[in-house]
Length: 225
Ligand code: DC
Image (cartoon, rainbow, N blue to C red; front, top):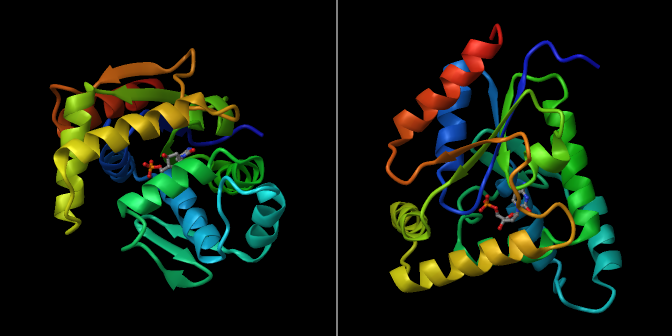
């Protein structure tokens, strides 16, 4: 089906600036913003509350059964699990780690891909994550891959946690970030990687406004949004 408005896919590692940039870009274009990381985080909360361990025997069966009764709702910044608002707990470092581990499992990815495709099928969406341009919308009209120097990304992640009132050690934030990126890139299913046709933007020395402007001008110059 031909989409009337485009899909803008933004992928990249932790702390590359994806969430803020995607949110602002969506606002500037009048598009819907979808944070797919928040969806994986919500599923991780559901699975961990159900007592599922990502490395236990027969984990896929257990995951399938929990997923059958877990309803993940997403509306911009607000994430719900079976109607309960869990937006304030999903950014915790423990949830980041769990989300990264559970997201490697086939049933989790299949369910998320289905929800994400449904959310973007009509277009007019800015969707950010790890596999949007490669697996969820390989036919996206616009694909961006944001990256930045690892120390800068860790510093941003640390500041983000502090702003949310989460106390964290700088060195520990860097260590966890490197480990999460390694795991997200090394997994077998839809790993983090740049789509061959994605535009790469190094956000190291750029402000959020500058990155948003670059993306916005690309989108506006090539489509009638
Ligand atoms: O974007 P984030 O840090 O909130 O994502 C949390 C984890 O979810 C990330 O470490 C890997 C997983 N994830 C994924 O596998 N695919 C996506 N499209 C988005 C996130």
